[in-house]
Amino acid sequence: MRVPLVVGILALVIVLGVGLYVTDFTAYLGNDPATCNNCHVMDAVYESWYHGGHSQWAVCGDCHTPHDLIPKYFIKAENGYHHVTAFLFGDIPDAIRARESSRRIVQENCIRCHSETVSTMLESVMELDRYCFDCHRSVAHGERGISILPYRHEEEGK
Image (cartoon, rainbow, N blue to C red; front, side):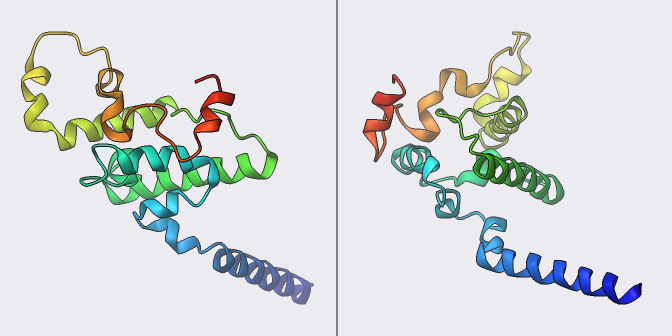
């Protein structure tokens, strides 16, 4: 009874190890924007960031993940899970939109990086009922429509 269990666990470890090696798993632990662009559906997002205002100052993880170590890798794992399942089951949206939890992370990072600029707003009595990117949408990723694949925008009605 013990031998089949050991063989099964060993086979699982080998399959997982080969899978992690083949997919270059460790690249996804870093912050290189080219890694985020490994999937062709990210071409327009990557290209618009590359030509946008933040490309000289921030990479994907600076805006889209928390900066504390454990939350950062938890979010990376959660996003990776969603990306892999979308590709496995063919559930890839035509337009990639951030989930509400992602929108909150981006907002927190806007405030963290631009704390001096927004300090008076944060101290005011005015209701802060919008995200920074509601008004400053083109800052990080440039103007909408900038893409190396402009025909995609026509198909999507943009």
